[in-house]
Image (cartoon, rainbow, N blue to C red; front, side, top):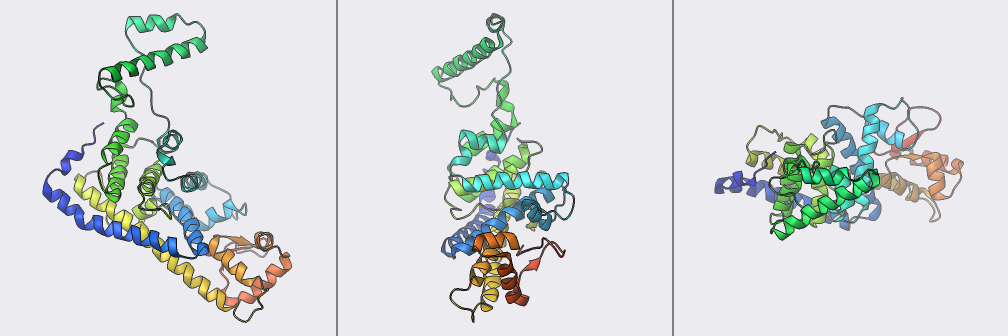
Length: 359
Protein backbone atom coordinates (compact mmCIF):
# COMPACT_ATOMS: atom_id res chain seq x y z
CA UNK A 1 0.00 0.00 0.00
CA UNK A 2 1.13 3.55 -0.75
CA UNK A 3 0.46 6.78 1.11
CA UNK A 4 2.12 9.80 -0.48
CA UNK A 5 2.30 13.20 1.21
CA UNK A 6 3.88 14.68 -1.92
CA UNK A 7 0.40 15.26 -3.34
CA UNK A 8 0.31 18.31 -1.04
CA UNK A 9 3.20 19.87 -2.96
CA UNK A 10 1.25 22.59 -4.81
CA UNK A 11 1.34 25.80 -2.72
CA UNK A 12 -2.43 26.17 -3.07
CA UNK A 13 -2.91 22.92 -1.14
CA UNK A 14 -0.89 24.20 1.80
CA UNK A 15 -2.71 27.54 1.74
CA UNK A 16 -6.02 25.68 2.06
CA UNK A 17 -4.78 24.13 5.30
CA UNK A 18 -3.62 27.37 6.93
CA UNK A 19 -6.93 28.64 8.35
CA UNK A 20 -8.31 25.24 9.49
CA UNK A 21 -4.95 24.46 11.09
CA UNK A 22 -4.90 27.72 13.02
CA UNK A 23 -8.51 27.26 14.19
CA UNK A 24 -7.91 23.69 15.33
CA UNK A 25 -4.68 24.60 17.12
CA UNK A 26 -6.31 27.56 18.88
CA UNK A 27 -9.29 25.49 20.04
CA UNK A 28 -7.08 22.67 21.31
CA UNK A 29 -4.65 24.92 23.17
CA UNK A 30 -7.50 26.98 24.66
CA UNK A 31 -9.20 23.86 26.00
CA UNK A 32 -5.96 22.46 27.41
CA UNK A 33 -5.24 25.73 29.18
CA UNK A 34 -8.77 25.88 30.59
CA UNK A 35 -8.45 22.35 31.97
CA UNK A 36 -5.03 23.12 33.44
CA UNK A 37 -6.44 26.18 35.24
CA UNK A 38 -9.80 24.69 36.24
CA UNK A 39 -10.47 23.29 39.67
CA UNK A 40 -9.22 19.69 39.80
CA UNK A 41 -12.71 18.29 40.39
CA UNK A 42 -13.99 19.94 37.21
CA UNK A 43 -11.00 18.90 35.10
CA UNK A 44 -11.28 15.32 36.37
CA UNK A 45 -14.98 15.31 35.55
CA UNK A 46 -14.39 16.48 31.99
CA UNK A 47 -11.68 13.88 31.41
CA UNK A 48 -13.78 11.05 32.89
CA UNK A 49 -16.74 11.91 30.68
CA UNK A 50 -14.56 12.40 27.59
CA UNK A 51 -13.51 8.76 27.90
CA UNK A 52 -17.14 7.66 27.91
CA UNK A 53 -18.23 9.99 25.09
CA UNK A 54 -15.32 8.91 22.91
CA UNK A 55 -15.93 5.19 23.48
CA UNK A 56 -19.60 5.60 22.59
CA UNK A 57 -18.73 7.62 19.47
CA UNK A 58 -16.16 5.02 18.34
CA UNK A 59 -18.85 2.33 18.35
CA UNK A 60 -21.27 4.67 16.59
CA UNK A 61 -18.75 5.22 13.80
CA UNK A 62 -18.63 1.44 13.33
CA UNK A 63 -22.41 1.33 12.99
CA UNK A 64 -23.18 0.09 16.51
CA UNK A 65 -25.26 2.02 19.02
CA UNK A 66 -24.46 1.95 22.73
CA UNK A 67 -26.46 4.08 25.15
CA UNK A 68 -24.23 6.18 27.37
CA UNK A 69 -26.28 5.23 30.43
CA UNK A 70 -25.79 1.53 29.66
CA UNK A 71 -22.03 2.00 29.46
CA UNK A 72 -21.90 3.92 32.74
CA UNK A 73 -24.13 1.44 34.56
CA UNK A 74 -22.23 -1.56 33.19
CA UNK A 75 -19.00 -0.17 34.60
CA UNK A 76 -20.65 0.04 38.01
CA UNK A 77 -22.05 -3.53 37.64
CA UNK A 78 -25.58 -2.11 37.78
CA UNK A 79 -26.87 -3.11 34.34
CA UNK A 80 -30.59 -2.57 33.82
CA UNK A 81 -30.49 -4.50 30.52
CA UNK A 82 -28.63 -7.57 29.36
CA UNK A 83 -25.14 -6.58 28.09
CA UNK A 84 -24.66 -6.78 24.31
CA UNK A 85 -21.61 -7.45 22.16
CA UNK A 86 -21.54 -3.77 21.22
CA UNK A 87 -21.44 -2.85 24.90
CA UNK A 88 -18.53 -5.24 25.41
CA UNK A 89 -16.66 -3.60 22.55
CA UNK A 90 -17.33 -0.17 24.04
CA UNK A 91 -15.87 -1.34 27.35
CA UNK A 92 -12.72 -2.51 25.50
CA UNK A 93 -12.42 0.87 23.73
CA UNK A 94 -12.84 2.60 27.08
CA UNK A 95 -10.06 0.47 28.59
CA UNK A 96 -7.67 1.31 25.72
CA UNK A 97 -8.37 5.00 26.05
CA UNK A 98 -7.90 5.04 29.81
CA UNK A 99 -4.66 3.12 29.50
CA UNK A 100 -3.28 5.71 27.08
CA UNK A 101 -4.48 8.62 29.23
CA UNK A 102 -2.90 7.16 32.38
CA UNK A 103 0.47 6.49 30.73
CA UNK A 104 3.30 8.95 30.17
CA UNK A 105 2.87 11.19 27.08
CA UNK A 106 5.45 9.31 25.02
CA UNK A 107 4.41 5.82 26.07
CA UNK A 108 2.03 5.35 23.13
CA UNK A 109 4.99 5.21 20.75
CA UNK A 110 7.11 2.84 22.81
CA UNK A 111 7.17 -0.89 22.08
CA UNK A 112 4.28 -1.56 24.46
CA UNK A 113 2.33 1.39 23.09
CA UNK A 114 2.79 0.23 19.50
CA UNK A 115 1.43 -3.16 20.50
CA UNK A 116 -1.67 -1.50 21.97
CA UNK A 117 -2.30 0.77 18.99
CA UNK A 118 -1.54 -1.43 15.99
CA UNK A 119 -0.49 -4.81 17.33
CA UNK A 120 3.02 -6.26 17.04
CA UNK A 121 4.95 -5.28 13.95
CA UNK A 122 4.68 -8.06 11.35
CA UNK A 123 7.66 -10.22 10.62
CA UNK A 124 8.92 -11.08 7.18
CA UNK A 125 7.97 -14.52 5.85
CA UNK A 126 10.53 -17.28 6.03
CA UNK A 127 13.24 -17.06 3.34
CA UNK A 128 12.86 -19.11 0.22
CA UNK A 129 16.51 -19.61 -0.71
CA UNK A 130 17.92 -23.09 -0.32
CA UNK A 131 20.71 -22.18 2.09
CA UNK A 132 18.39 -20.60 4.65
CA UNK A 133 15.90 -23.40 4.28
CA UNK A 134 18.65 -25.92 4.95
CA UNK A 135 19.79 -24.05 8.06
CA UNK A 136 16.29 -24.04 9.51
CA UNK A 137 15.75 -27.70 8.70
CA UNK A 138 18.79 -28.69 10.75
CA UNK A 139 16.97 -27.74 13.97
CA UNK A 140 14.70 -30.65 14.78
CA UNK A 141 13.72 -29.17 18.14
CA UNK A 142 11.18 -26.28 17.83
CA UNK A 143 13.08 -24.25 20.42
CA UNK A 144 16.26 -24.38 18.32
CA UNK A 145 14.24 -23.57 15.20
CA UNK A 146 12.98 -20.39 16.86
CA UNK A 147 16.55 -19.44 17.77
CA UNK A 148 17.66 -20.05 14.18
CA UNK A 149 14.89 -17.81 12.85
CA UNK A 150 15.89 -15.07 15.29
CA UNK A 151 19.53 -15.34 14.19
CA UNK A 152 18.53 -15.14 10.54
CA UNK A 153 16.49 -11.98 11.12
CA UNK A 154 19.33 -10.47 13.10
CA UNK A 155 21.85 -11.22 10.34
CA UNK A 156 19.56 -9.56 7.77
CA UNK A 157 19.20 -6.48 9.96
CA UNK A 158 22.98 -6.22 10.34
CA UNK A 159 23.38 -6.64 6.59
CA UNK A 160 20.97 -3.74 5.98
CA UNK A 161 22.85 -1.54 8.44
CA UNK A 162 26.21 -2.36 6.82
CA UNK A 163 24.70 -1.51 3.44
CA UNK A 164 23.65 1.89 4.78
CA UNK A 165 19.93 1.10 5.22
CA UNK A 166 17.81 1.64 8.36
CA UNK A 167 17.75 -1.06 10.98
CA UNK A 168 14.13 -0.50 12.03
CA UNK A 169 12.48 -0.69 8.61
CA UNK A 170 12.42 -3.44 5.99
CA UNK A 171 14.63 -3.25 2.93
CA UNK A 172 12.90 -2.09 -0.28
CA UNK A 173 12.43 -5.63 -1.54
CA UNK A 174 11.21 -7.02 1.78
CA UNK A 175 7.58 -8.31 1.68
CA UNK A 176 6.93 -6.53 4.99
CA UNK A 177 7.58 -3.18 3.32
CA UNK A 178 4.10 -3.04 1.82
CA UNK A 179 2.12 -4.00 4.93
CA UNK A 180 -0.30 -1.36 6.30
CA UNK A 181 1.28 -1.18 9.78
CA UNK A 182 4.77 -0.53 8.41
CA UNK A 183 3.47 2.01 5.90
CA UNK A 184 1.54 3.85 8.60
CA UNK A 185 4.60 3.98 10.85
CA UNK A 186 6.64 5.44 7.99
CA UNK A 187 3.97 8.10 7.44
CA UNK A 188 4.17 8.89 11.14
CA UNK A 189 7.94 9.31 10.84
CA UNK A 190 7.43 11.66 7.90
CA UNK A 191 5.27 13.99 10.05
CA UNK A 192 8.01 14.85 12.54
CA UNK A 193 8.73 18.21 10.86
CA UNK A 194 5.05 19.17 10.55
CA UNK A 195 3.11 21.22 13.14
CA UNK A 196 1.70 18.94 15.83
CA UNK A 197 -1.98 19.33 14.91
CA UNK A 198 -1.30 18.84 11.20
CA UNK A 199 0.86 15.81 12.01
CA UNK A 200 -2.04 14.32 13.99
CA UNK A 201 -4.42 14.95 11.07
CA UNK A 202 -2.01 13.25 8.66
CA UNK A 203 -1.57 10.30 11.03
CA UNK A 204 -5.33 9.88 11.37
CA UNK A 205 -5.89 10.22 7.63
CA UNK A 206 -3.23 7.60 6.89
CA UNK A 207 -4.84 5.27 9.43
CA UNK A 208 -8.27 5.66 7.84
CA UNK A 209 -6.83 5.04 4.38
CA UNK A 210 -4.49 2.15 5.22
CA UNK A 211 -6.55 0.45 7.98
CA UNK A 212 -3.50 -1.06 9.73
CA UNK A 213 -5.59 -2.69 12.49
CA UNK A 214 -8.77 -4.20 10.97
CA UNK A 215 -11.77 -4.35 13.33
CA UNK A 216 -9.92 -1.95 15.65
CA UNK A 217 -10.79 1.32 13.95
CA UNK A 218 -11.02 3.20 17.25
CA UNK A 219 -7.25 2.97 17.65
CA UNK A 220 -6.59 5.40 14.80
CA UNK A 221 -8.19 8.38 16.59
CA UNK A 222 -6.48 7.21 19.79
CA UNK A 223 -3.10 7.20 18.04
CA UNK A 224 -3.67 10.72 16.69
CA UNK A 225 -4.76 11.90 20.14
CA UNK A 226 -1.67 10.31 21.69
CA UNK A 227 0.47 12.10 19.10
CA UNK A 228 -1.04 15.44 20.12
CA UNK A 229 -0.31 14.62 23.75
CA UNK A 230 3.27 13.54 23.08
CA UNK A 231 3.93 16.72 21.06
CA UNK A 232 2.73 18.91 23.96
CA UNK A 233 -0.48 20.21 22.38
CA UNK A 234 -2.76 18.37 24.81
CA UNK A 235 -0.92 18.10 28.11
CA UNK A 236 -4.00 18.26 30.35
CA UNK A 237 -6.23 15.80 28.46
CA UNK A 238 -6.41 13.12 25.77
CA UNK A 239 -8.46 14.54 22.87
CA UNK A 240 -11.68 12.68 22.03
CA UNK A 241 -11.19 12.45 18.27
CA UNK A 242 -13.76 9.70 17.70
CA UNK A 243 -16.31 12.09 19.15
CA UNK A 244 -14.99 14.78 16.82
CA UNK A 245 -15.34 12.45 13.82
CA UNK A 246 -18.96 11.79 14.72
CA UNK A 247 -19.92 15.39 15.52
CA UNK A 248 -17.96 17.29 12.89
CA UNK A 249 -19.91 18.87 10.05
CA UNK A 250 -17.10 18.20 7.58
CA UNK A 251 -17.25 14.54 6.55
CA UNK A 252 -14.10 12.59 5.77
CA UNK A 253 -14.14 10.42 2.64
CA UNK A 254 -11.42 8.32 1.06
CA UNK A 255 -12.56 9.60 -2.36
CA UNK A 256 -11.60 13.21 -1.55
CA UNK A 257 -8.19 14.70 -2.40
CA UNK A 258 -5.64 14.64 0.40
CA UNK A 259 -5.91 18.38 1.10
CA UNK A 260 -9.70 18.14 1.48
CA UNK A 261 -9.38 15.13 3.77
CA UNK A 262 -6.91 16.95 5.99
CA UNK A 263 -9.16 20.03 6.16
CA UNK A 264 -11.96 17.75 7.37
CA UNK A 265 -9.75 16.12 10.00
CA UNK A 266 -8.49 19.47 11.26
CA UNK A 267 -12.16 20.28 11.74
CA UNK A 268 -12.47 17.06 13.71
CA UNK A 269 -9.76 18.24 16.13
CA UNK A 270 -11.50 21.59 16.54
CA UNK A 271 -14.90 19.96 17.05
CA UNK A 272 -13.59 17.61 19.74
CA UNK A 273 -11.95 20.50 21.60
CA UNK A 274 -15.08 22.63 21.48
CA UNK A 275 -17.23 19.71 22.67
CA UNK A 276 -14.98 19.24 25.71
CA UNK A 277 -15.13 22.98 26.37
CA UNK A 278 -18.94 22.84 26.37
CA UNK A 279 -18.80 19.91 28.78
CA UNK A 280 -16.59 21.94 31.10
CA UNK A 281 -19.14 24.77 30.98
CA UNK A 282 -21.96 22.32 31.68
CA UNK A 283 -20.21 20.81 34.70
CA UNK A 284 -19.29 24.23 36.04
CA UNK A 285 -22.93 25.35 35.84
CA UNK A 286 -24.21 22.11 37.42
CA UNK A 287 -21.74 22.45 40.28
CA UNK A 288 -22.72 26.08 40.88
CA UNK A 289 -26.41 25.18 41.02
CA UNK A 290 -25.83 22.26 43.40
CA UNK A 291 -23.55 24.32 45.66
CA UNK A 292 -26.34 26.86 46.17
CA UNK A 293 -28.14 24.17 48.14
CA UNK A 294 -25.11 24.05 50.45
CA UNK A 295 -25.03 27.77 51.20
CA UNK A 296 -26.91 27.55 54.47
CA UNK A 297 -25.29 24.35 55.68
CA UNK A 298 -22.80 24.01 58.49
CA UNK A 299 -19.10 23.89 57.79
CA UNK A 300 -19.04 20.26 58.85
CA UNK A 301 -21.66 19.28 56.31
CA UNK A 302 -20.60 16.65 53.75
CA UNK A 303 -23.03 17.97 51.15
CA UNK A 304 -20.36 20.00 49.24
CA UNK A 305 -18.24 16.84 49.04
CA UNK A 306 -21.21 14.95 47.58
CA UNK A 307 -21.61 17.72 45.00
CA UNK A 308 -17.96 17.37 43.99
CA UNK A 309 -18.39 13.61 43.79
CA UNK A 310 -21.23 14.11 41.32
CA UNK A 311 -19.01 16.40 39.24
CA UNK A 312 -15.86 14.26 39.29
CA UNK A 313 -17.51 10.91 38.51
CA UNK A 314 -20.17 10.11 35.91
CA UNK A 315 -22.16 7.87 38.26
CA UNK A 316 -22.87 7.95 41.99
CA UNK A 317 -24.78 5.39 44.05
CA UNK A 318 -25.73 5.54 47.70
CA UNK A 319 -23.15 2.86 48.48
CA UNK A 320 -20.32 4.53 46.53
CA UNK A 321 -21.09 7.93 48.08
CA UNK A 322 -21.16 6.41 51.57
CA UNK A 323 -17.71 4.88 51.00
CA UNK A 324 -16.24 8.05 49.48
CA UNK A 325 -17.61 10.37 52.18
CA UNK A 326 -17.20 7.96 55.10
CA UNK A 327 -20.84 8.31 56.16
CA UNK A 328 -23.77 5.96 56.46
CA UNK A 329 -26.11 5.20 53.53
CA UNK A 330 -28.91 6.88 55.48
CA UNK A 331 -26.85 10.08 55.62
CA UNK A 332 -26.36 9.96 51.85
CA UNK A 333 -30.11 9.54 51.35
CA UNK A 334 -30.67 12.61 53.49
CA UNK A 335 -28.14 14.68 51.51
CA UNK A 336 -29.74 13.65 48.24
CA UNK A 337 -33.07 14.87 49.55
CA UNK A 338 -31.47 18.18 50.56
CA UNK A 339 -30.26 18.76 46.99
CA UNK A 340 -33.87 18.68 45.84
CA UNK A 341 -34.34 19.74 42.22
CA UNK A 342 -30.60 20.42 41.86
CA UNK A 343 -29.90 16.71 42.23
CA UNK A 344 -28.53 15.06 39.03
CA UNK A 345 -30.68 12.81 36.90
CA UNK A 346 -31.46 9.32 38.16
CA UNK A 347 -30.10 6.83 35.61
CA UNK A 348 -31.58 3.47 36.58
CA UNK A 349 -35.29 4.37 36.74
CA UNK A 350 -36.00 1.90 39.52
CA UNK A 351 -36.82 2.10 43.20
CA UNK A 352 -33.90 0.09 44.54
CA UNK A 353 -30.19 0.16 43.70
CA UNK A 354 -30.52 3.57 42.15
CA UNK A 355 -27.74 5.66 40.61
CA UNK A 356 -27.43 9.34 39.71
CA UNK A 357 -25.05 11.07 37.38
CA UNK A 358 -24.29 13.99 35.09
CA UNK A 359 -23.80 12.35 31.68
